Amino acid sequence: MYNVGQMNKQIVTGYDLLALTGPTASGKTLLAAFIASRIGGEVISADSRQVYKKMNIGTGKDYNDYVIDGKHVPYHLVDIVNPGTKYNVFEYQRDFIPVYNDLKARGSFPVVCGGSGLYIDSIITGYRMYEVPPDPILRSALEKKSMAELTAILSTYRKLHNKTDLDSKKRLIRAIEIEHFQSSRKKMVSPFPALKVLVTALHFDRETRRRRISERLRLRLAGGMIDEVKKLLTDGVSSETLIYYGLEYKYITLYLMGRLSYEEMTCELETAIHQYSKRQMTWFRGMERKGTVIHWIDGELPLEQKAEQVIGLL
Image 1 (cartoon, rainbow, N blue to C red):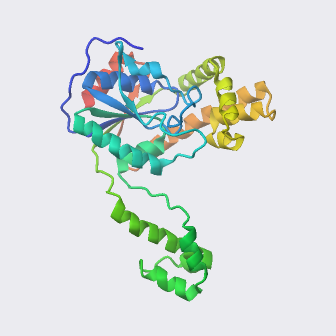
Image 2: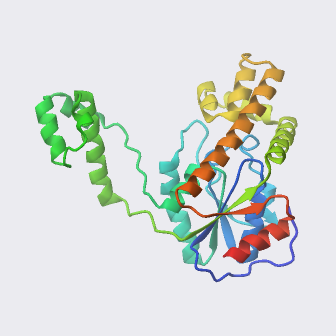
Image 3: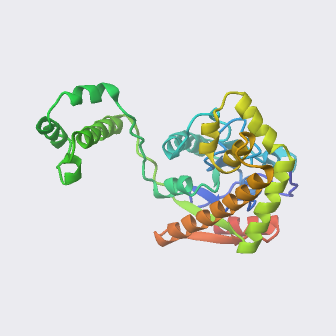
C-alpha cells in the first residue's frame, strides 16, 4: 500500500495507452498502480504467469501494490485462467482487446504493466497473432488424397512460392490446415487495433538487479512459496505442467519430487532468475533495434519522481 496526495486526475494525451515494462523484481506493479491513480487509469497486466489463479507468490502478485492512498486501483488480466492450462500470446491478444475497449469506453486510461516482452511487443506492433490448432476432421479427409491433389488444394488458397510445403504429404496437409484456419478466422475476428503506445521501462545497473532478485527470492521462500507449489500439486496440477511454467514452479517442484536438495534448488533457481532477467533485457534491446522507442526510467529514483517522469512523457 502507498499513500499519495493527488488522485484520479484525468489526463489529456495523444497516446492510446502507457506501457511500463522492465526486468523482473524492478517494482513495475507499484509504479503502474501509482501512475494509474494519478491519471485516472487502470492497470492491464502483461505478465505471462500472473494470468493463473492460485499461483500468487511465485508469480509476484503483489496485490497490496494496487492499493494507493487506501483506494483500490483496478487491474485486469490477472487470475483469469486455472492452473494447469497453457496460456500464450494468442490468448493474451484475444483477452486484451475487450479490456482495452472497455477502459476506453469508460474514459479510463490503460496502463499496461509487465515484464513479458512478447506480450508487450504484441500490443505495440499490433500484429494479430493466431494459434492454429490441429483439425482432425480436415486432416482425416486430406490423408486420403494424393500429393498432386493436396498441391492443387493448397494452390486454391495462395500461390505456391514456398516449395518446402510440397516436400511431403505431412507438410502439405499442415499448410492446408493453416490456410483453411486463417481464411475462416478473417471472417470471425476483427483486426488488432492500431495503438499509439508510450513505452517506458525501469532500469537498474546489473549488480542492483541481481541484488533485488536475490533478496526477493529469499522473501518469497520465507513467505510460503514452497507451500504454494505443494498445494498446486495436491489440487491436481501435474508436476510436468508446473515444470513447464518454469522458474519458481519448476525448481520447487523438482525439490518436492526429491530430484534436488533444498540447497541445490535455491542455488539453481536463483541462477535461473538471473538468467531470465538477462534475457528480458536482451528482448528489450531487440525491441529498440527494431524501432520501438523505450524511455528508460532510473529505478533508484523515489516512486513519486519516477511517476512524474513517466506522466511528463504522456
